[in-house]
Amino acid sequence: MHPHAQVYAHAHPHALPDLGRTMVLTGASRGIGHATVRRFSETGWRIITCSRQPFNRQRCPWEEGPDDHVQVDLSDRRELQLAIHDIKAKLNGKPLHALVNNAGISPKTSAGSRMSSLVTPVETWLQVIQVNFLAPMLLARGLFEELAAAHGSVVNVTSIVGSRVHPFAGTAYATSKAALACLTREMAHDFAPHGIRVNAIAPGEIKTEILSPETAERLAPTIPMRRIGTPEEVAEVIYFLCSDASSYVTGTEIEINGGQHL
Image (cartoon, rainbow, N blue to C red; front, top):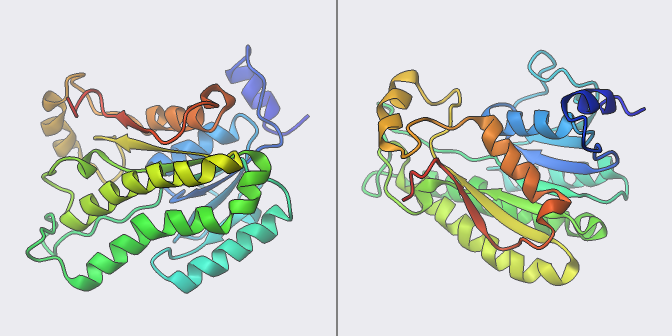
């Protein structure tokens, strides 16, 4: 039996594990990415993780982790190309069932406040656009053959800030996420004839390490559901978009924000 099958059977006794499926996920070291790895891992998926940090066995207690981890700075285009070659080597000709573009950067001022369009340096703009917008497209294009072989699914993680001004997220971050939402639509159109679905999720306020308790307490009353979301709730939607349950869903952006966008 696959090492994850017993865990899955215990947690989900009425469903079958997804043994033999493989996912590539960026930004895996914390928050939504970390919860997503856990969700897919417990159902038997093989996950190739990508992040700026080296593999951390204490935070990530799955056996295959070190061998299936790619350390890469997505802001460096040369490093990204080398990472794609590394991922392809790890796949070794096998199909890729899902690519989750979760990594993103949101630079702040030296005082920790949002960077507006009046003060954001050009270098910061270029870095944010490379990580948040270009990297997802380059990864999907670089892994196209493997995705097509699996009739795979691409999930781009956008944000509620792509459609509204936010008190903490800066202009470059918000613009990159709006662009990624548009790119999702274009990719869905271009990839569909090859059997690849492309969707996006747009999380609102999610309880991660970068959201302080004070901020969460202040924002919760402004959300119709009166609470902050959890990374696990986001991971469930990602799982849906990578599963056969969403086989006719492509080109859409799913809001995950407790009604905050209403």
